[in-house]
Length: 91
Image (cartoon, rainbow, N blue to C red; front, side, top):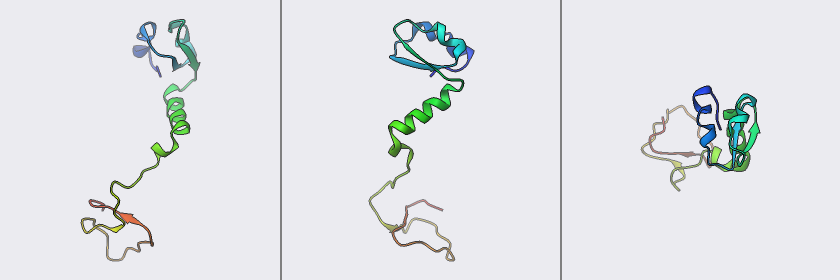
């Protein structure tokens, strides 16, 4: 994506299949680049990424351990649900 006047100066030298940008910069892209116009290209890029790769935006465990790591700091009054994973370093 290209957003902002400073980055728009790089548009003529793009070597991409497509670019997201505001309408005001669309004419600066090479003819070989598909221009996807959006008023907030960074937001659109993030949304497209979440749609294409939904699991990438979902945090997952760092290890295959289950339960509460002995290296986690859990308050004695906390209730931990069955199947929860609390990894080392968690506070």
